[in-house]
Image (cartoon, rainbow, N blue to C red):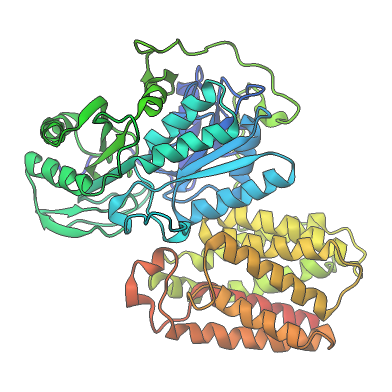
Length: 604
């Protein structure tokens, strides 16, 4: 298989997402349009009153996933993050509002921590506004975790990743929504598709991100990495370079042993997708599919409308993946249903009615100005590192505390980056500083006063949490945003400040962060600093706030340092095994700094 790097145009990494989305909307204006002031696209057919909105999303670098799969019969909208990064909760929320036709929203996306957190935050906000939201995670990658156990409750943070099987799940969900199914039925169909889908992939060379001089990850020359993930996550094993037939055998062998029990009514039919990861030539993929087809048929399976092409890529990675979905009559009908998107069109089949290509209906009241038909011409305002302007001489309490936290964490930005680079991508310091700058600006605009009213501070923290999550992105941004927003929510219901009030707020924040991230105390996350802080505040509930907060912050600082003795068990760091042992967790460390800065502010 080809491994020679492909030459391409230079890209400005700072504007790459904006530039390619605008180009997509220009090229396929007949099908999609930009969601104004948002990194997302919505179909020209959406919103349609009374129709469930299927909203998908994920990072850039995976085209046609996700924006290329928006159109009648498939997804109604897609929110797009930076390269290999989840879209923020704010971007997901705006995109969903643009697609909502009043019948509810189905979120579907690959099972990655950042996506789970940011889509989860958006779902919370939509639900609070009265929109019915369901979520279906795609978990098809057999190389990324053990198989599901019958009757065992799934823990999403530990479950398998979503890769090229995204396409099958999105296609089934979109078709169910297009034919008029209600939200419960659309979600049920998508869940069934996911349960019947398995994927296994292989890579021959890594990928290089826009503006980067070196590959994000590499595969040793003359070898094949079996089971490598679409962000370069480690595979199951490394083998010698395989011929096309040997590669096909490896893909099929790893899938056959993982296929679920066939659904009732299955007669051997399987939807088959041989997916290119970005650099593999189509002719090469057809050579591989020749042997895949032979092997599947020899195993008693009947490929149904097989697809060979690029559906979920990894920028310019050299490699392929094989996805199989076991079909019953219902899944086959939904998979065969027509659709029309920039990257994939399906014509009406023998028993399929033509797609509904009626002109778009006007947006209902539930989906406000974001649903305009005018293409977005102004880029979304990027998060800036510039200091907030027009600041008052004296900030109100919430804004002042956030400013103090920003100042202290910014002074430790490099240290936090080094801690994160031990078992992560090294961007924690940069991301949290960027998020806190946005949080200060949002709080300053939202905190009306008076200074003695916790409801005013609560409103500021709610706004700050959303702004931080939007600007920071990633899992850390979502968790920090949730922490601030949940604290703010408790304060908005209070009549006066007290240590007991903030102890209750810390309880609410810990529950929300744990629920969103799936972590527990001891997993080497920010919870390991938050929990002792919470406990100390409760122990000092009857004491004045400044002294109690200072003691609690000291407990958090000691606990953050003690995370050096823990081994990560959540997120990307968990896959690195004992590599993170001996180093404090960056999230726990930055939280301790935030709490310490607030203690110093209260003590003035």
